[in-house]
Image (cartoon, rainbow, N blue to C red):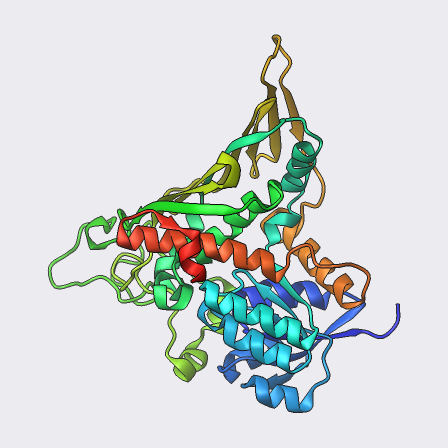
Length: 405
């Protein structure tokens, strides 16, 4: 097997721990050499939970002065991706950046320039590309079963998305907007499935229609205000949307960790200050007349990504939850529709996609593979998301070319 890969994780939230730490810990060819987090208490607690012994740093500069690393994984809030990616690349490290690449086109371009200057690799954590169902869908499209694709959509229902309004994800200043933070997954899937057509213009509509003070799902009693967070709320035992922290979250966001930086993870999702949406629709027009729409709904108990891909030879209807792809030929006889039931990797986050993502990164570090998600792909996805955010907030159609001026 050879020498173990030495990998550092920058950011010890749930992605940095529950995903990347958990997966790397199980590998025989890699070790978590270091944690870097400005909240030292949280990093120490993460190491304790996972029974590992990484060096712990509160700055990239300190880590660079002491560590020789093969790669780093960046899982800090989106607004810091650019800063930490540039520092990591300039320190001579290959980088996996959990999506998005950055929160705007300008910062994405700077990361790309830095990677070119340093000769280091940037891979993006677009884990959906590793999902067995979407990998099979891409094969079907590439095989020409659907013919020339001219229209596609994705409807995402994500019950867990409501907790965005309890966390840092609720604020534009940290995310660049949910069309980037969340939508970057889905815009990238469109781009990837269709061999990266050139996006021309974007329009979107989004709002907070449910998770606002008028939507509180319980009657209030005189003298008892709800909130400010689910742990102390008077109504926590009767609120159907109470955000109950997992056992791991209770440790990582315990009193000592919260005292370190003041960050509370489970604010009331109805009363919290927020400027991101709880639902929306974005539409993209690509060169050649190809059109795509992406629908996000973070309200309800349903969780699924449902794709429809229409080509001049057939239509594919896809459910990630059901793990099915139904293909209906354009000119069909009765019974000609074919339904593919996709097995494959089931264990691990995002339908088995996360373990494949980590495995690919390790193989890239060993020189056994090239990244299937590059910084250029991250730039393309962010450009669509940024245009969608501008469209939503300025109530107009946005030309992608505006972002490159």
